[in-house]
Image 1: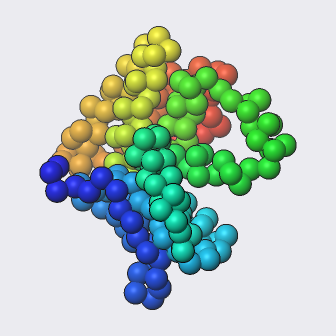
Image 2 (image 1 turned 180 degrees about the vertical axis):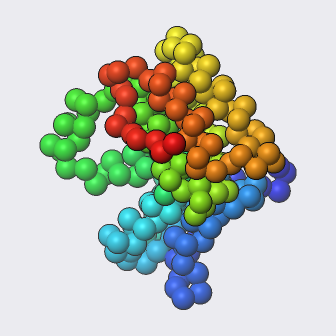
Length: 216
């Protein structure tokens, strides 16, 4: 909307403002700005603070004091190199792989690069992992579980169509239809959702099938 900011700067200044907690609450809210890029400003942030910021959904951490060049680099990175959005349960925010890249040792990075899947298979694998977590969180966090399942059903359908896997695409579409009215019909619970998700996992090819057990 017109009033939604394009970029948010947060100065980590406890106890007045805990930037990580603020960002986590923002990401899980219904505000139009919930997906807006966030840059955390902090004086001598510790590794634990940086990790907490990453896990809360912060895009970048800028150490204070900083130069104009430092600031413009972060702004350019955030606005021009946008990352995919991850709508999960344990995590909601931008894809953390960009955030982690500078922390990876060379050997670990090379090993990871050798194991890269195709983009579509990677999307499917991540979507199924998030769906499993969402299923387990239905009773404790139903709103975010529903939001995550809706987002991952969309991801699965798009990836399946790109892979010409029309069985999975159809199962994802069926799941989306169920989720559209599940709350209103009183059918959004772990039992009914597990049954609907069964079609998704049944359509999964053997080479990427996750080891997931769904309760009846």
